[in-house]
Image (cartoon, rainbow, N blue to C red; front, side, top):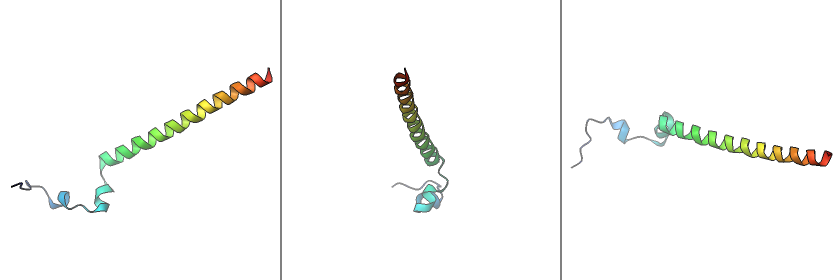
Length: 61
């Protein structure tokens, strides 16, 4: 019933290596997730340092 409409076989028979090899959507997804993790860590460190600086400043006064 469903014919493979002039699609090359490589689209249907991808191995696990070909699946990850040059998939731009997958690469973009990994890049965005990586950026999200990095920015979260930077925000956390920044908040922590600001709090520490305020505590040190209060202690010095």
